[in-house]
Every structure is written in structure tokens, then in C-alpha cells.
Amino acid sequence: MPVSTKFVLLVALLTLISAHDARAEKKTVCTITVNSPDEKETFRRSLPQDDFEFVELVERGRPDWLASACRKGVRCDVLLISGHFDDGTEFYSDRLGARESLPTDEMERASCSDSCPGLFSQLKEVYLFGCNTLQAQPARSASGEIGRSLIRSGYSPADAERLSQVLSERHGESNRDRMRLIFKDVPVIYGFSSKAPLGATAGPMLDRYFQSGSGSEIGSGRASPKLLAMFAPSSMTVASGLSDSDAGAGFRRDVCHFSDDRLSAAQKLDFVHQVLNRGMAEVRMFLDRIEKYTESLSESERQTPAVAGVLDAIAHDEAARARYVEFLRDADQPAVRARMIGLAGALGWFSPSEIRAELIRMIGDQLAKNAISPAEVDLVCTLNKDGELGQERHRLQLSPGQANKVTDAAVLACLGSTEAHARVLRALTSPKDEDVQMAQVYLRHRPIADASELRGVATGVMRMSGSDAQVHALETLARLSLSDRESLEALARLFPLARSLTVQRAIAGILVRSDFRTIATPDFVKTLRQSRLKSPDGADVIDVLIRRLQAS
Image 1 (cartoon, helix red, strand yellow):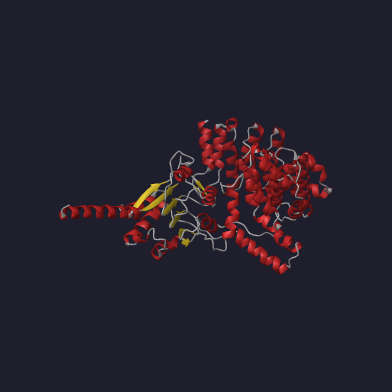
Image 2: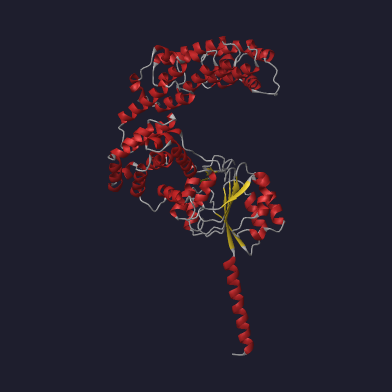
């Protein structure tokens, strides 16, 4: 073969090798655009096409887009997620018609199951453009019953306090902790400790960053001081994913037992049994996950021999049951205690009648401690939404003085007492604002349906002085969508007598939601115009009412 031919072939071979190496070094930027595309488009415009390839993982209109992306085997070097993240449970959009979201539970499942290695395991950098994505404030902390439980177990008060702090740190699960758990081994995770800039603001900020010549840092796996400085006024911060040597690695393994798809339902439930045999303090910290997993078990899954066997083992674990029941009866928060009672029923430790008895015991304890607040009334009404808990009302022993208190009467009314119901209705027209608010909570669950009762309440509200209590009472009536003519006429007569703009607005709020056609007369419209108090804010609900009355 001539030398010239050999030279040409060699050059061609080197060119092919060079092109292959170039393609091999090309980085993939995966984007999950739930809300604003501004950040993604700025990255796309600013990074050289020869060095970066972009893949959008969201498939519009397809609910399983994350699983679809995982099945395609996309391998990501950089991940960019854009979406609102206010409550820390999911990335979501505020755009009309947008249905795509990215729940953190789904991200955790994919990470723990190792079902998405291209998305999680190969990452060098993650950019989380959403509020509070790396907020360090714990989502939960050790409550008072945890320290008391540790002391009952033999720890000194000082040691119990120290261990409570350790549990709080281990189980705090701040947004930052959860992102570190999800993006295991990722060297750089950018996010925001509080409010993040919207896409329309973040895009130009990123433009300035890239224009400064810093684009070569992208995909390097090293935090960029320049990017952090650029976004410092917007609370940008940085973290790294958990590693196997990290102090939180053990907690991640525990968490993954609840969400790893590679584990069977029986294996996950067996892990729940293991947790139940740890200290009750740790059981309390895992309550959310244990509760969520047991609720997710379908009846058909419960009937399979493997799952039924584990459930039976838990149900017959008397030692764990005794520790659990002792702990739940000492819980500081009634809502937590109620959840633990419900979980005990799901685990086979309480029968339906025992669940009702335990809930009544809990309510009785709160009454005895004189610790009834609107939250407790809301809880009791919710617990008795089907009326079954009311069957156990006779177990509560209250003195006549207690039963006459609005707080205690509201609890009894939630449990179906007609006498207490009448007492709470009278409280709605009380001059005490706290009594009115208690009645409001009750009536959200048990709206007034009887016309004569409604008429009596409306008349009582009319007689109240223009106080905050009267405004709250009127707001309660507004939610009832009045149609009783006499009640509406009484409110119409009250409007010109009111000496407070807040009261007039509250009356207008009731009428605009009601069947106001029964009082839609020219004289009433004239009364409204002449007697309305001047609004410093311009047009308000009174103007809306006038327009609707005229139109009808």
C-alpha cells in the first residue's frame, strides 16, 4: 500500500477516534420543567452544543413521565428542576392547565429503588429552582412524650434530653436533608434556603453568570463561588448528597426500607415490625412513614400469605403492643394520639370498639385537663364524621358546669349531643370572641340545617354590638348560603344600622352568597347606596352586592 494512502487512512482513523472521544465527553443536561422554562432555556442558550446535550424528562399529558424517562435509560450528568416547592412535598406549577408535578415521595422511591440510575447515580450537579428546596429547618422534632418515654425506660433526665436531641437531628427531615437523601453521592446540589427568584428573574441572573465566562464550571462536580455569589441575595445555597460514610447513611437505609420497589410488601412490613421493637421514641419519629405504608396496603395484599403472616406476628407481639399503648396514652398532641390509635387498629392491636374506647379516653383526658381549643373541637368533629364515635359519649363524665362551658359543649356537640348543640348555637351570638370562634369551628362540621334555628341565630346576630365577635358570627352565616326570607330581611334591616364598615362588609358577604333575589328591590338598593360607609380601599363586596341586586 502506498505511503500516501496509508497516511490518508491514518488521518481518517484519528479523526474517527477524535470524533468518538468528543461524543464520549459530551455531557447530558436533564431538565424537569414543571413550571418556568426560563432557567432551562438560559442553560440551553449559554452552553455549547458540541459539549452539552439537553433532554427534557417531562412528557406533557403523561402522568408516569418520570418512570418513562427511567425506562429509557437516560444518563444525566446535570439535572435542572424548575417548579414551585413551597410546602416541601412536591414541585408543582401555578400555570393554568398544567397538571405535571414531581412529588418528593416519587423522587425518593426512584432513588431508593435504584430504578433510575441515569437520573440519580451518575449525577455531578443538581440545580433545584424552587423556594425552600434546601431549607434547613426540621420538618419534625422530638416532642415531650419522647423524653418522658426515655426516662421511663431508665434514662436520666439529662441523657433523655440528649437522646431526644439526637433523634430530632436524625429524623428532622428538613428539605435539605431530604434532597441529600434523594441525590445520594451527588457532589453538588444547588437550591434555596428560603424564597427563590421566579423564572423571569432567575433567567437574566443566569445570563449574567454565563456572560462572565463561567460556563465551563457546569458539570464539573465542583461548587461555583461565582454562581453562589450571584444568587446570594436570593438565598441560594449548596449541599452534597449523602455518602455511605456519612453520619446519616443509616437513616437513609431505614427510610429506603419503606420505599424501595425491590422489597416485597412482606419485607417492608417486616421492617415495620423491627422498628416497632426499637425504642418507642424512634417509633414516634417514624410514625408518618409507618402510617403511610400501612395505609397503602390494599386488602388483597393483606390477604397474601406472606403479608398476612407478618401482620399476624405484629398483632400477637404483646410486648411491643404494651409499650406502644403506654406511649400513645402519654402523647402531648391529641391529633398525634388519635393517629397512633388508628395505626394500632391497622396493626391489629385494637378492635373497632377498642379504637372508639381509646379515642373517648383521649377526649376525656383533654376535658379533664381543661385543654380544649378550637383544634381539639375540629379533631373530635372529624373523628365522629360518621357518627360512630358518638355511641361512646356516655363514657364521658362531665359536671353540669363543664357541660355548660362552650369549649366542652362544642366537644359534646361534635359527639352528637342535642343539648350541647343548642349551647354552641347560643355561643355564636356571644359577646366573647373566643366563644364565637369555637362555634365557628363546630358549625364548619355541622352546618345549621333547620330554618327556625337559622332564623334564631340570625336574629341573635342582629342584636350583637358591632364587635369582632359580631363580624365572626356574620362570617359563619356567610358560609351557610342563606335562603330563608325572614333571615335575609333581618340582615337587610341590620345593614343601615351598622356603624362599622367591617360589619357592613360582612353582611354584604352573606347576602351576595345567598338567594338575594327575595330582597332585590329598588328600595333596598337605594338603602345600600345611602347608608354604606365610605370605603378607604375603593370598590369592595358591597359594590358587588349592589351590582348583582340591580342585575336581578
